[in-house]
Amino acid sequence: MADHAHYIIRRKVFKIFGASFHIYDATGSLVGYCKQKAFKLREDIRLFTDESMSTPVLTLCARSIIDFGVTFDVSLPDGSTIGSLRRKGLMSTFMRDQWHLFDEHGVEAALIQEQNALAALLRRTVDMVAFLSPQKYEVISNDGRIIATFQQRFNPFIYRLIVTIHEQDDQLDDLVLLGAGCLIAAIEGRQE
Image 1: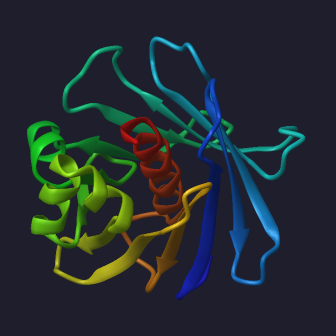
Image 2: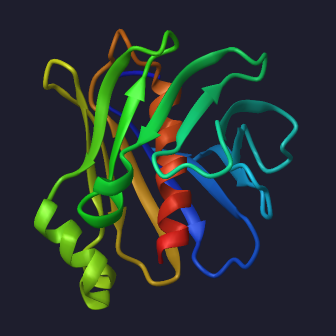
C-alpha cells in the first residue's frame, strides 16, 4: 500500500447473522471481502481478496471469549502475527472509542480514537445524534502524527467507512490499519 491510500468499507445494515464487508479502492474496484462469522464464542473476522473467499489476506481473532478490553491479533494466512488491537474498555463504552495498536513485537505503535469527544458522548446517549452524526477516527502514531483516518458516511441502508492512510509508518503494517477499519465496521454494526 502507498501513502495516501484510500479505501471504502461497505456493509449492508440489515443483515441478520454475521456480517460481511466489501472493500473498494479509490477507483471503486473491489480489493477485498471481509467476513465475520456468526455465533462464534470468540470473535473471528477474516479478510479475503474477493467474495469467492479462496484467497485469504488476514485474520482478526479475539484472544479471549469475554474481555471488556478485548485484544484482537491480526495474522497473515501463514499464521504470523503482524500486529494487534486492544480496545480501551471503559473509555470506549462510555466516552469515545479508543483502540491501542501494537506492532508484530507487541510494542504499542499508535492509538485510534474518535475525533470529537462531545459528539461521541452524545452519540452514545441520544439516538438522533447517533443517526445524524457519523463517527470519525484518527490513527495517531506515538510521535503525534496522524497516519490514517476512518470516517463513517451517513446512509441509512449501507454502512460506509472511508479509510484513508495518509502516510506510511515504519512500525505499523498498513494491513493492520485496513483490518482495524473492518473491526470498527463490525463493532459499529453491533452498536447500531
